[in-house]
View (spheres, rainbow, N blue to C red):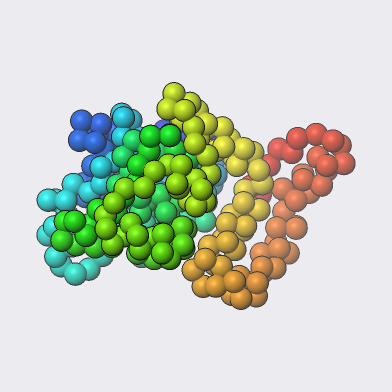
Length: 260
C-alpha cells in the first residue's frame, strides 16, 4: 500500500491525508487513483458517514505533478477511472452522496483548489493561498475550476484569477463564501474532525438526502431540486432514524442514529 495517501477510519469518519510533504503534496496519477478509491469506500461503506481531506506538512498541495499528467491531458479525454473509483473532481461517473470536509494550509494550487471546489465544507489557515496557475503554464483548468469557481465567488471575481493565474488569500475566500472558517494551523485538523463528528452524529439518511438535493440544485438547477424534494421523504419518515429522532425529542435526549 502506498504511503502517498494515508487512509484512516475512526468510528463513522474517513480521514484522507496527502502525505508527500517533500513534494509539496503534488498530485501524481497514483495519488489521484488512491483518492478515487478512498471516495468509493466512503460512498459504499454503510459505516462511513463523512470524510475529511487534509494534508501533512506546511502546504496542502502545490498542484499537479504536471510532467506525469501531460501525456494523459494530451489525449484530449478525462483521466479514465476503473470500477470502484469515484472521481474526486465530480466530473465523470458516480456522484458522492456523503459529505466531504477539506482542511487547507499554505499553498492550495490548481488541482488542490479544484478538489476543494468539489467538497462541501472548507476550512483553512490564515496563510492559505489559492490559485489556478494553468494559464501561466500554457493550459487551462480542466478539473472543474472554470465552472465551479464562478459559482462560488462570482463571475468577475473568478475571471480575475482564472485569466491571470494570480493568487488569492484565505481572508478573501472567506469573504466570498468559498471558505467557512479560518483556523490556527495547530488546530486545523482538530477543527475539521470536530465538524466531521457533528455530521457523523446526525441522521445519515437525512444528511444524504439533504446533500443530494443541494447537489441536484447546483448541477441541474433549483426547479429540478424542487420537483424532487419530497421524493425520498416517505422512506425516510418510515426509517428507524426518524422514529429515533422523534423519540429523542420527546425524551429530551441526544439521538443515536443507525442509518436505518
